[in-house]
Each structure stands twice: as C-alpha cells, then as structure tokens.
Image 1 (tube, helix red, strand yellow):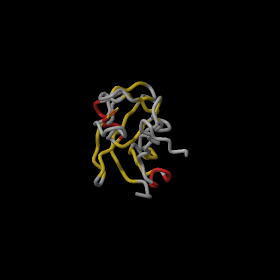
Image 2 (tube, rainbow, N blue to C red):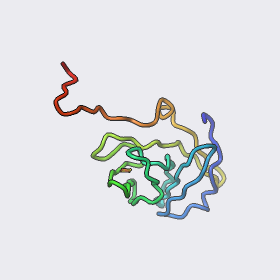
Image 3 (cartoon, rainbow, N blue to C red):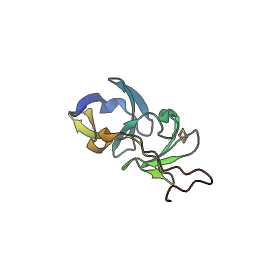
Image 4 (spheres, rainbow, N blue to C red):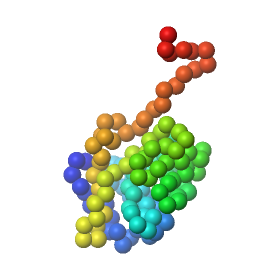
Length: 123
Ligand code: FES
C-alpha cells in the first residue's frame, strides 16, 4: 500500500472512541484525540490484543491485556521495546486517507533481543 487509500469519513470518527476498520486484508484502528487522527494496526505488537478495547489518553494507548503503553506519534513502546505499526494519515475533503509508512514496510514488529538465563550472547 504505497499510495494513499480512502479509509473512512472523518465525521464518522468520534473524539476519544477508537474505531476498527478493515482495509484490504488488514484490521486497523483510527483514534481521534480531538486534534489529530492516529491510524495504526489494531493488534497490540506484544501478543495481538485488539487495541480498540485498550485505554487511550491524549497521545498514548495502554493495552488492556498486559498494560504495555505506546506513543501514538512514534509508535514506540513506553517502557517496552515493542513498536506499534503506524500509518501515514492525510485528511482531504473530510476523508481520512492512509498509507503505510516506508519504515513499517520493512517488517512491522520489532522483537527485542532476548537472552535466556545462563546464556551470554556476547561471548
Ligand atoms: S497483548 Fe498488549 S500488552 Fe500484551
């Protein structure tokens, strides 16, 4: 999805209420904080909880399953190494248009380095 595609009319998105929309084969969520529309993958990058049921504040989402938090501007985990997949958003004539971010096409999920007890990967 390298070109902007129509997602939904902005008037259908209510402030503070996330909405899940199916775009092609993907389920994505739109959240409007009263100033800006954020569009991201509906699945939490930790264990795929449905983020339409998460808790939202101004520019942050907190997953309802294990409490992981994500910055809606950058997608970066707050206090964790996971990353939320974000979309670029454009508003035209009252329509919300989206496209995949270039860096997101590389792979989406970020898996932190895992070391097991007794294992030293540096030697
Ligand atoms: S599934 Fe979202 S924090 Fe675990």
